[in-house]
Amino acid sequence: MANFALIGAAGYVAPRHMRAISETGNRLIVAYDPSDSVGVLDSYFPDVHFFTEFERFDRHIDKLQRRGGNHRVDYVSICSPNYLHDAHVRFALRCGADVICEKPLVLNPWNLEGLKEIEAATGRRVACVLQLRLHPALLRLREQLPARPGKRHVVDLIYVTPRGRWYLASWKGDESKSGGVATNIGIHLFDLLLWLFGPVRRSDVAMREPLRASGRLELDRADVRWQLSADEADCARHGRGRNAFRQLTVDGERVEFSDGFFDLHTQTYRHAIENGGFRIDDVEPSIALAHQIRNCALNPSALPADGIW
Image 1 (cartoon, rainbow, N blue to C red):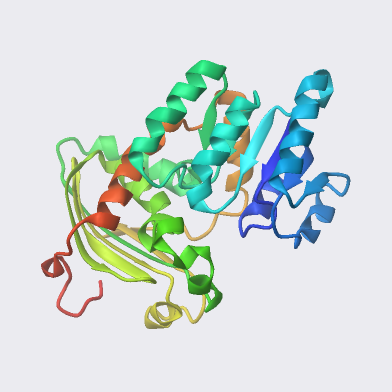
Image 2: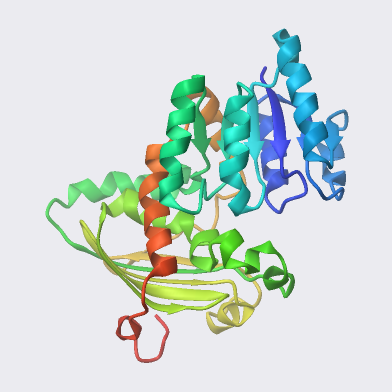
């Protein structure tokens, strides 16, 4: 049984991490968040030590690490805002703990080399949440693709996950903190595309707005059109009301992956604990692509005439 600390306990995705820690038979012993809206802890670990000040959290972690034995923190799970991941990963490694970090690991690709150096210096490791790589339907698709050698695939990806007005008022609406919609929502999708179809040859971004982005990718084995949205109106446009709409089409065949998300964080934790998880090198290509999409000049010609596919 491993001991966990959690940074970002009040975050949107934190309950999935609490559940994963519980379902893998481990313990959450200390948690931190500047917000105290963390009553969800009672559903999983009511005895956890909780702090709203990082300095006190740091002091408590240091005390546990010095006591050693079954008191020490083995893993730090990071669910803080995106722009803080880099600093929190560094903190955890220097405390002598392994890390399980939510997406994106960092916002800028040049920060990855520093994390690798700290991994090497401390002997600890960073595992990244790339849960779509563990989705059964997407694993089956990846297994089937090599059966078509030399084929260049035509791929359409639409991912619409509605967010309310709070989204733009929060840190997620600040591109310097979240990386924008293409990073905050799209990073998993870009990782999935690169994992399935190989590295980027060319990327064109047609539209980049606070709640929407779209473009085209030329990958090693596929030509991709992609559209991301957190706008509720796009759900209605696809006949989904306020429900998320996820559609991946490969060579005209739809790959359904709307279901099966519920326990992917638990599978991610098992993979990290038993096999080391997805490492820094695994996330580097998608972080580089998301950074390029966030900073490149727009090419409106990459968008269909009606703006919809």
